[in-house]
Amino acid sequence: MPPGVIVLLLSLLLGLQPITTDLYLPALPMLTADLNAPMSQAQLTLTALLLAFGISQLVWGPLSDKFGRRPILLVGMAAYVLASVASTLAPSMVWLIVWRTVQGAAMGAGVMCARAIVRDLYSPVQGARVMSKGLSGLGVIACLSAPLGGLVTELLSWRFALLAPAFFGAMALMVVALRFEETAPQKNPPPLRFGTLMTSWQRILRHPTFLAFSALSAASYGGLFTFLAASSFVFIGVLGLSKTQYGMVMFINSVAYIGGTFVCRQWLPRFGVRRSVALAGGLSLSGGTLMALLTLSGWVNVWSIMLPQLLFMVGHGIHQPCGQSGAVGPFPQSAGAASALNGFLMMVCAFGMGFWLGGHMDGTVLPLTLGIWFWSVLIATSAWTLVQRHGV
Image (cartoon, rainbow, N blue to C red; front, top):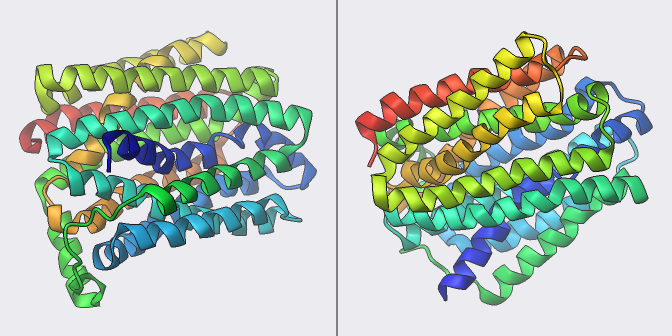
């Protein structure tokens, strides 16, 4: 495949995540009111999706090692489109949670295969640079998702905001069907045997490089998820922004993330992976600490949150390509299983944080700001210790 096709494919597959999560965030308060549901149930439309997303990768990964990436992508993308349409038609919050869960499971096929494809085609260091290009595409999609979701919700309704991912999934399915060529180096029958699969997982989970980079990517994603899960209630409900204004907040957030992926590509050849991650850890910790201190001191407005958040997101744009490619790097023959475990660990952190937020959103900004501070400390700790000892 030409390099441009690979980057386009990675951008679409990785972009499933922001399309599925970010685009409907401006509609979250409205759909909660329209479906007459408590905030805790509304949070489940996101956390249940992400839990299914994480768990499903443990299935999709070995299947893709056995049958190849292409058939898994075709099945997963078709299921994603169907679940997206069903979510739009959900008559109650319970049914919306059910279909969002199915949607998350199907999304796992696309995102997991994207990470595995990078390892199929590139060495770990090259993979970090290629992954950063794909994640730049993800950032552009994320830039458009929240403003589009806010505009669609304002002009039409929240149901149309839930329908948009179906069109995006159909486009990804078309690219896979027409342009994607199989990348798995060889079919690997043993992973579907339970004993062999458990042995493979244990081998991956015991590898210090996998653990170091998975800790980094999981902590970084935990911070991002905290912002995604709580920001609509904070910026719209507490700070009084309109849905369109909130969409612009998310746009700015995504621009900072794109900037981080560009910085990543500049730093990697100059500093290498370990030093790049260490520098980015300083950005993450500075952003999280500043955000917490400003809000604890009583200075609470849009910019007291967003300026530190921009620092955090630049760091996130460096940690994710390095973390995701680094975790899969030692396992060229079982890239699907390693990618699946890495994705699963990220989603476990997200689900745990979402569960905590569901019970602690108290009408203030503190659950958001202190949550991001917590994750920034873990990011810096991982970047400055584990990755330095065991990174590539």
